[in-house]
Amino acid sequence: MPFRTIAGHSRLLPLLSRVIARDSMPPAVLLAGPAGVGKRLTAMAIAQAINCQQPRSSPEFERDACGECAPCRRIARGVHPDVIVVEPGDSGSIMIDQLRDVIDRSQYRPFEGRRRVVIIDEADAAGPPAQSALLKTLEEPPSASVFILVSSIPDALLPTVLSRCPRLRFGPLTPAEVARVLMQEHGYSEGDARAAAADADGSIGRALESQSEDLTDARDTAQRILQETARSDDPVRRINLARDLTEGKGTPAEERNRLAVRLRSLGSLLRDVGIIASRAERGMIANADLQSQLEKLSASYDADRTLRAYAAVDRALTALDRNASPKVVADWLLLEL
Image 1: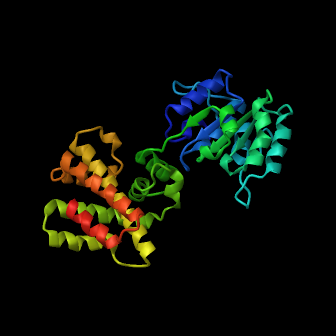
Image 2: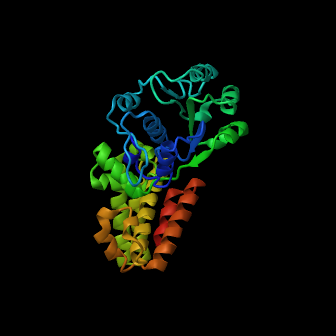
């Protein structure tokens, strides 16, 4: 997984590439940010870039792995002797014995690579005793080893551990970046990818966990509601439309979850309509496959109305989180759009 193949993080990845090219990689670093945005992939890309036998350079990346030499292929398969990955076991925790083992191995010279790379994925799953066992190694790191901690909950790490690891902050991906990965690497159709990306909150992992059929249906429903509210402000008609949001099926929890998914789709479409109405950069549109329909909606939803509607959707989601009735939330929202 070379740097050039990772979606997003256009500032962090070139920085890491430059640091590796200049042989100034810190002995320990923390990759922190939301789950499912590419932190572990980046850790593997670091390991490949350090140990690649045929590194590449480009205007964007001073040093990047080729992805094709024997070390790169073995790192990708998880069988390189100098790249050690520690992750939670069946218990959901990283045990102290796991860390003691890699600490012992890190003291020796690399078997065949330039440097040994120890990747501790979900480092926050290590309890205080396990983290304390790691601390001495972070304070006096072996010269031939690099420790990469990966965490979506960095505040769960001991302050002493945090103080020994420069933190690189990973932000969420854009909906367009998530959709592109889903289409190129997971075989999604454009419509399914855009729908999943709109609900993924910038996380490829979250998008892959979602049911694409439900998300596509949610986006279709949200689009239909915006088209109907653009045509009519009749309160009775709008209350009838609210039934499309709730459907009244399943348990209360299922109904609340279904409404939340549709509200997030509605918010995504409104955001795109606002981009069009304000003549902002079109590359920011999440639902690019619906651009022609969204442009028609922008005739009725100008920038001010879109902003008010988006704020109403946000308030509706907050009310759902506070256990408000899905029907009451849907009725109120349709009168606000």
